[in-house]
Image (cartoon, rainbow, N blue to C red; front, side):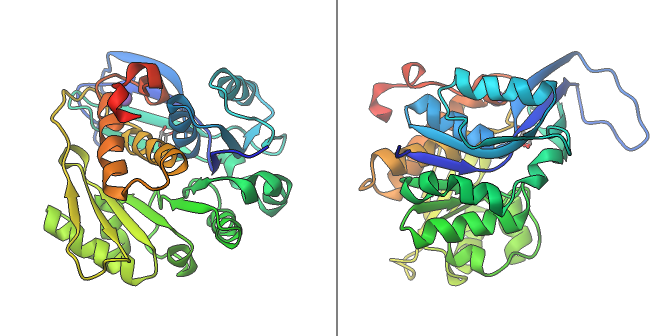
Length: 311
Ligand code: RIB
Ligand code: NA
């Protein structure tokens, strides 16, 4: 079976509290709503790609517990292949404690748990799918070694790779850059990796040039409501291209970056000759829908909810 998009990455149960503001250290505040949702950057990206119509598989690990069982059902409900979803008794399903303030901003603590047990053996089992996928996507909520192996395997098999270095770590093995067809991060991740303070679109362009210099084929730096910048090694001397977004009313930005990446993976698989800027423009629009509703995956649109011009 050949998949459009294979994601090697994380699953987390999101435990979300909505509160007027984020609490300070040592402080207790009243929130107004609590809910549990499906999250984790890897799974979020996979679900968004699937909802747009990509044939997807997830390579991940959950616990042999209630949250793990539930998560597997969630993949099935969204048409994601669970052939490579492992379950372990040695650790619990990953969990994310999330607080969302009234401005739609968030603070998150993740306990990766079972995600950290995803390893080389799991990748070997998924190799038939990994080597024939159109696009492979990974992040940094599983062990970085596992992500790097997945990137290396995909690269060797001419599978297009999207690497999302999130959550950010200051020092990445240089091979991460060389194995990334599209290196996609947000402004704070770009800043941490390059040391370039990213406050403006021009700064993002400069940080992007540095990431290109490290060996990625192309770079996208997402800038929230300001859209993103796109750079390509094919035209290294040309300035970065800024792709703006239309203004929307923001309720919850949690997982908006994942919605963007999932949509991007769909476009790379389904429209391989489309320019990266056009893909980014459309992915911005998809992510823009997700920020207008509370929740992570709960807010991700399906093909039927989106304008036909996006397909
Ligand atoms: O990117 C958003 C995600 O980050 C949330 O769903 C949470 O699970 C954390 O992993
Ligand atoms: Na949302």
